[in-house]
Image 1 (cartoon, rainbow, N blue to C red):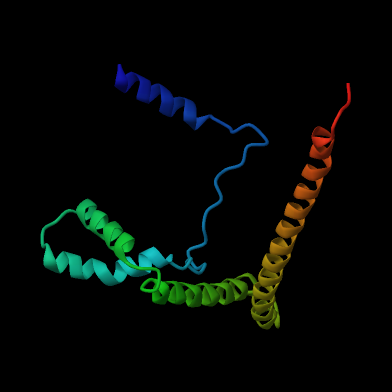
Image 2: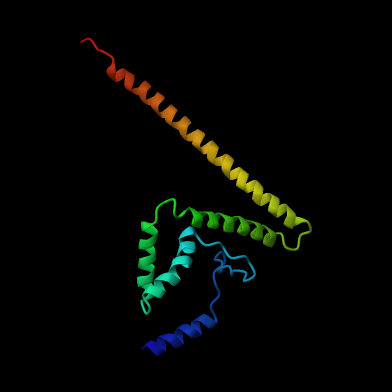
Amino acid sequence: MAKADKARYEREMKTYIAPQGETTKKLKDPSAPKRPPSAFFVLCSEYCPQIKGQHPGVSIGDVTKELGETEDDTAAGDTQPYEKETAERKENYDKDIAAYHAKGKPDAAKKGVVKAEKNKKEKEEEEKEKDDDDKLVLVQFFSLSVKHLSPLYTTHSF
């Protein structure tokens, strides 16, 4: 039964044409820069050989559990070097990806580096604006709440 179904499936797939509007999966370019690892993976790359050295022959699942516990046990100040390294790798990645996208365009690599630096400044400004917007929303919310609640607290004479 399974062999017959497989033969039928292969026969039908030879003549199959995908309906219009459906797209196929976009393939990744192997020459594109790789994304930087997160702070957790930087921590793992440092502690994984130590754990494997202490417990030879342990499964990868057990090593991963141990790494997770190690991350949970580390204080916020101890993870700062990993986060700093991650930020540096992210900046390098942004420059590399800008240069990759600009490949083939004259003077575009320089513009990509400048653009990456501008994006960082823009993100900082957006965060400041977002904080200001949050404060404004809270002020508006409380002022509206007081206006709507004030009729409830007025005295009525019957």
